[in-house]
Amino acid sequence: MHVVMLAGEYPPRWGGMATTIFHLTAELAASGHKVTVITRQGTGDAPAIPGVRIIGVRWLKAPMAFTRSFGRHALRALIALHAEDPVDVVHVHTPLIAWTRRQFQRCHREVAPTVTTLHGSWIGERDGLLMARRRREPAAIANPNDLAILLTAKTYARYEQAALDESTCVAISAFSRQEFVERYRPPEGWNCDVIHWGIDTEMFHPRPERAAEAAALRTTLGVPEGHHLLLAVGRLAARKGYATLIDGFAVLREQRNDVHLAIVGRGHLKARLLRHAAKRGVSDGIHIESSLPFEALADAYRAADLVVFPSLYEGLGMIPIEAMASGTPVVTVDHGPMPETVDATTGALYPVGDHEAFARAVSGELSDDEARAAKGLAGREKVLERFTMAREVEAYLSAYARARGN
Image (cartoon, rainbow, N blue to C red; front, top):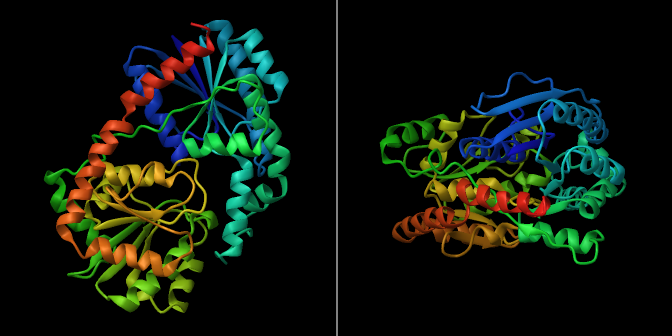
């Protein structure tokens, strides 16, 4: 089967969506399927995967509008590709590509049926930004992209509505599916499966042979001898809730001084977050690392005593799953899709913005080494049961068959 992925984000543009699509294409190709990825050009060469072809297309470099521009160029490239190498199914990844009803209909008429993965919604992104602003996250809407989301989310939601009306849809979490039921207008009889992301369980693994590398990462992340490491990973953006995390960390530091918070993520908020940490009097206990190679990131998960994930809006959230696969418990918010991945057997949940509850949850986890180790093992088992690439590919092959009427 020839599967074409329409992906607005794909390596070397790394992010949650790009990572999961990258691994999905690799697994499909390894299973004997031909895969073509049509993505935005301009950031360098994608990592080579046997059996996967990459086509880069032009796009307008403007906030939000790039989704429409990329969509138009992607459709032209798709039609041309089909003429030389017939396509069996088109896999669309919203919201970073925006098609109208007519574009979906043209794809079905001239190329192949579509399966659309709903990675999240523009309405949800907007509400996440508004929550960040209410919680006084730094630069909540100062970034041009964030401001564009705030002002145009409702307009761009109509393209997601077109996907609901004209495509076989899959959501990455039960939360995301319910979000579209409540905030959009699914057609009567709408059937949307939930297919959770699968991750690379070979890379993200509690590997004892990497103990020395994990210990070295603690030095890189500025962890003093004898301190517990709290690790937060993800893009430095307002909706990720890092200032709220620092506020909770400040409360935790009032109770115990043997904790160190390391944040790994790119973004324009580093200086603002460090100033916020200084204002709260905890700058000596916080380190921000702009990025780490994948193997080093995996070592960082293994090096951490806990992974903390304070995000205000996610479609699913890959970081907690990677952490659990690495054998590290997770403390995260009891909000959005997070209870689908983390529970009391694999970590702890706390109410968004409740700094005292955050401090209690973290301190409780750190106070019992044996229980924390058991939660790490349970997290690994949960990932192997529910979040593997093999499981994700099997589910998508069923979705492809359904779209094709098989």
